[in-house]
Image (cartoon, rainbow, N blue to C red; front, top):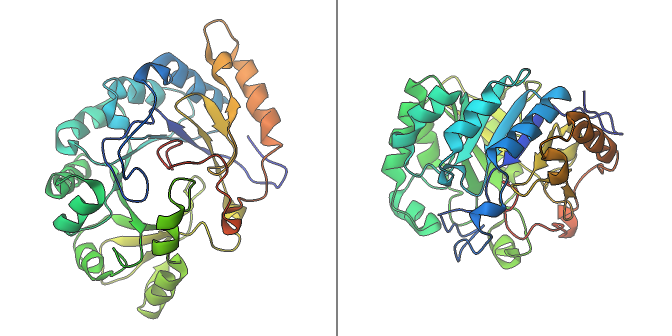
Length: 322
């Protein structure tokens, strides 16, 4: 089992398959994607080797991220390969939901077990303004289809002051929709410093409101992500809060990241990353990858430096998958 010098154990890998995204969200890529060609990204064989190595180190959950993972035509193959690896109990995917109704059954048939969909507003006009796409009804239909297929579904919403911090529409939706909607504090990156100053709001204010209104905390599971989740007897859905600026946020860290270029990132907001790609090639024993990750894990710090406005090498969140 992977364990760092602070006693934190790592059961969860976020594995990016591409930096490319076809949305232009205000807080991430307001000018659209400006990046690398597709051939730079890890191949299915390299991605499989990453997953095999981490499974050998005790990883139980792998989340495929981007950019937007569905822009890879070989995504079903990647899901299927990872699903069949011994020790991997959960194969999850984070997506913007583009063409979700047409694609979700193929992903489920390949072995996908958990789906996170990014929806920053339940108002169609506001959704289009934030993302550049008029696709909210289609995405909501895809979520309905995913639930019908038996997938665990969560919705991610970046919490932005004066944009989507009015929770009335969310609460109305969660009364009859059995999904978890998770508010994520907008985070400062090198490309979005001004946006952060204008629109950051602490999730603690939402938490206080929930507790006053009778919402109750949900117990965390071993491979859960960083969200604090809450339930209410009058609602079939749940609310989650991801608050990276809160005290001791990093104390329960249980996840590592590998970028679409094969770089190990000990933290979302670390520096350039550690190149694992040479260890993913044919003929290189899996033990080399295991030894490298185990060695570098000793360098993982107690926490990030976001509170000091230091986002490391993170220019935008599409680079490592958030």
